[in-house]
Length: 377
Image 1 (cartoon, rainbow, N blue to C red):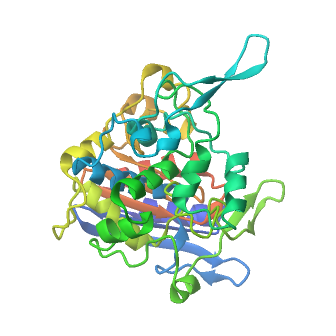
Image 2 (cartoon, rainbow, N blue to C red):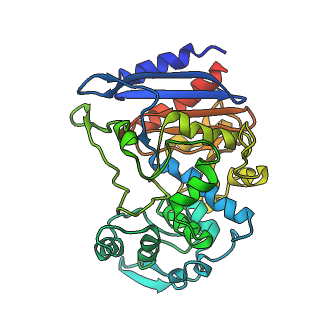
Image 3 (cartoon, rainbow, N blue to C red):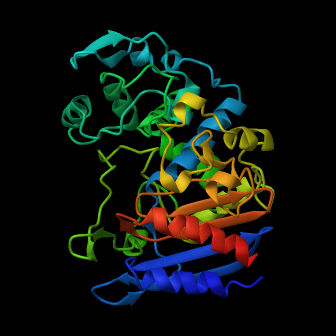
């Protein structure tokens, strides 16, 4: 293995638009390469170090889906169950319909939202964090907005389409977190700690930080195209309330910590020291393409060409379309500040890539990073 090309790529993007970048590569449970370059704090020129905590944003979604699949494995719910069996406020939904003359009307939904729809982003939700019902719930709870209250509020908003008919990147996994709470009985963060992060020895992953961890939170930046540079922009705009544990974008972690979780998935659900978080059958179901042909036009991000969408993850289905060197069945997801997970059971490969930059340059960085990693093996 020669990882010099990957080292040079990390150096190059850290000299380009990205303040810092770090990558950790595991092959058959061994860390074979880890490298970081750039400044965690541009103003102070502080070099990045391996203990820095970042916002995972949408890479939270992978763990949320694993948590919910654990409950499916236990028989606590089924993918084909209507979510109204657990969240009764979703029993009668309305759908926004645009008529031929351009007017919009609300009609009663003909299909129920199923548990599968939450996993697969086919429920009909939007990603509108400022929806009137959500804003009202924030005010009603005095800024707390517990996860369950969030889900109850979202149910008042009309759907964009009939559930199960289209794909839309949305607040599905935030509702899935509320579903875990209702089905299991614990707060979502407590469930993750008891069932996933604790057993795997992940000490730096969660929705809240201790004082010591807060000192290790990396400054966050946003690349401003008009200025041609990155500017400081801390905070997580997806944290809608002090008690809101966002299953879609709320977790914080380090490169080394989250790699422990990803590597367990590479091993089809079991860590190298024998901690099982999912069965191999569930991991295979998770990385099975769940898109129907009519949904593919909705799932059209250029960096995901050749990929399908499973239960909360991209999944590689066509090397000829993707141009990716990864194996079929390689899966994972990414986050708004640019982190990337590569999970590949066939190759025994786990990659955790991190940066902390909004307007993250993902379409350029991620496909190149992936191909370089595979070429280095």
